[in-house]
Length: 129
Image (tube, rainbow, N blue to C red):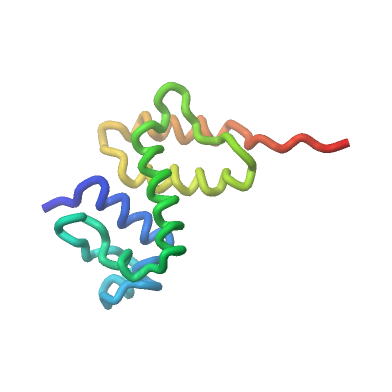
């Protein structure tokens, strides 16, 4: 049975943060740094249960933003480049996470969205005089 889109995105987010390698109790997940075990009811990777509250909050921030970008990225001119320059790396990571879950029929549009984002410079704060 194929994984649901949410389970797929959760697993890729956990792998990006090296959660299977650092926190999973399943040997095959640790060795491959890949989420192979998921709870049947929730679809959540098993290793997420081993995270502390602070670690889980970081995971949820990346996963939540990647889910938003997956759903809305490239629609109506949204590029996800706003805010301070320190957030740019966070949004870039979330865009790449979302790309792993884009359906095949939508990859061309999403790739155009990614290219458009690269051409927009991050906003720099004004210089105080």
